[in-house]
Structure formats: structure tokens, C-alpha cells
Amino acid sequence: MVAVVADVDALLGLASELARRAGELLLAEAPDRADDVSTKSSRTDMVTAVDVASEALIVGAIERERPDDGVLGEEGSNRDGTSGVRWIIDPLDGTTNYLYGFPMFAVSIAVEVDGDVEAGAVFHPSLDELFTARRGGGAQCNGHPIQVSGHDDLATALIGTGFAYDADMRRTQGRWLERILPSVRDIRRGGAAALDLCWVACGRLDGFYEAGLAPWDFAAGALIAREAGADTSAFDGGPMRAGSVLAASPAIAPPLRRLVSEAATL
Image (tube, rainbow, N blue to C red):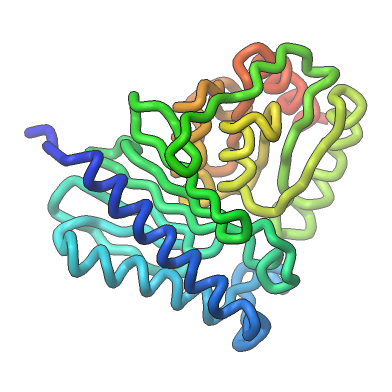
């Protein structure tokens, strides 16, 4: 098989531009954010017309600029490409936050080349922060290098997490907290996994874990965290995968994995 040759800097530039444009759309539509709301996997898993419009903006631009690329989007855009490049898109990560006017929501765009995520952009419109990374090139926020906190004591670490939409899974995740919460400084639940991972990358969180995430939730954020120095993995220490996402400063990642794994077996 011939390896794909891609201009990763150009791909990252396009991802960054589209993340910003979609984020500007979210802010522009915010006054009408409650219009045309429906649900997906459960009555708490909401989708709005803005989610769909944001994805359409991103995918439409990719189709014009790179018609041979593949696409995987949360709101249904899914096509195989012929170029070896695939775009993984969450057009509005944190829909519930967006609907409530809670300023933790983002646009997340990752770019795979030959199955490996090579570039990622996460735009946080509320703070005008664009987090970016390319594999092997470090991570940045608004063009400035960022790095993880370097915290080395789990007992005094600030850890982020999130909860699934399924009621039974949420109940299970709540039980995990009985084991995890007393063993860390505190827990934060922001409601947008892409941002949680970026906040690990820039040191606002020392670590993050969540079960039940889909590829578009973490593809870009995981690369950004890893390029900022985070240890990223599944709960069992293997490669990060859908349903099992953990990122933390290197010194606390092993004990955090053990803690989460133990909690998940109770």
C-alpha cells in the first residue's frame, strides 16, 4: 500500500479556519438557540438546527476544497473518500450547554491521514480560544505553545469527567465517583469533552476521564492533549478508543488509570 502524502500544515490551517467559522455561526445563532430542538439517543441527548447548520458549513467547505476526502460527522455526515484523508467533526460539542447559555461549548475538527490523526483544531467561541496541534509539532492556544500542568500528586489533582446520556450508564458513572472523588482534589464536569481535553493540555485540569465518548468527541482534543505532553490512553492502558478516554499529566496518569479501572469494577 502506498502511503498518503499530505500537507498537514495546510490541513490544520483549513481545520482551524472552519472551526472558527462554525464557532462564529454558533455565536450568531445563540439568540435563537432554543428553536427547532429534537433528541437522538435519549430524551436528554439533544440536537438543534444549529448543530446541523454548523456541520453543513464545515462539510460543505471540505467538499469544495477537498472533494476526495472522507468525512465522519456527529450529525450524520459520513462518506468514504479516496484520498486517504478523513475529517472527524463535532460541529457543536456541548449542545446542552449551548441551549442553556452555559459557555462551555466548542467546535472540534480532527484530520486523519491513513488512519492516524495528524491535525486537530478545537474552537471555544465563548472565550475566543482556538486550540490546535499537529502530530509531532506540539500544541498551541491562539498560536501560543501550551503544556500540561505537570502535577504529580493524584490526591491534590483537579480531574475532569463527563456522563453519558443513557440513564443506566449515568447511574453507573455516579457510583464510580464514590471511589474516585475522595482520592483526588476535586472533580469538574464541564459538559464538552473536546474542551476538557484541551484544558488538560493547557493545565486548567490535571487529568480527565470519560466513558461513552464517540470518535468525534475526542479525536482532536486527544491529539492536542498528547502534543501538550499529556499521557493519553484507554482505562486499561491501551490506546484511547471510543468509550474509554483518559488524559492526564504523565505522573498522575498511571494512578488515575488504576483508580478509574478499580471504580469501574465495583
